[in-house]
Length: 270
Image 1 (tube, rainbow, N blue to C red):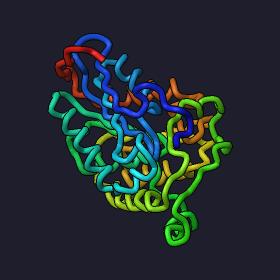
Image 2: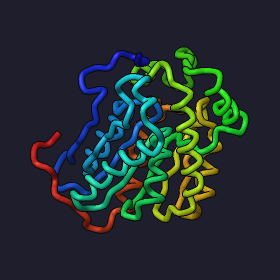
Image 3: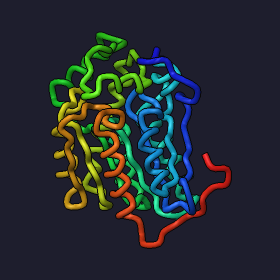
Image 4: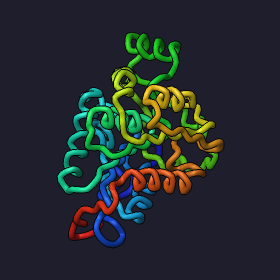
């Protein structure tokens, strides 16, 4: 069912408190389509070491079964992400959001709809897979039920890093069409984003065309910054440039935090 067997806690959301002192804000991390929280864990650990409270969410229909995913649509994913966002907002201090792949798309939509977000960062976010691919996905639902990704088609520079992913080995065409609907909704709302947006993409990405980064930035406007990584594939948070990406995201978030902004750290740690 999963690309690699999940370990204890892999199919659950995670919460990390700052390594020391009061939190300088909170960060919501959103995994990708058919993915799970572990792909965001290392980024979360770095953000916590830099003083942020971190929530790595689990999207509805993910981390269970591919059949379960069919019971949810893109609006369910948005509502779940917004619920996590509001929980973090209630803790006080600035709130940031970051996501990988579809998680990046959701992060952008949240930033467009929630002015309380102080900054957004995306990795391999998608809003345009190309007309031909869109047409294939739309038509495919009338012919096929499931799509089975080629597990040997790895675009990561560090090929062994794929073992750190826990993603479904089959994905329904219905779910793919929900993803297209999310992309379309997000693309329409990108101009509403006014906060600093860091748009990161890997040049080796064979899942989402790297041109998506420039398109997203052009729709957002001056508040967006694009950064390409020549070696990274699609799952950037586990690939070779991960540590540099973590620092980049942390710097981006903390630069957007109001001076002296802090919120109480939760008792009980991690």
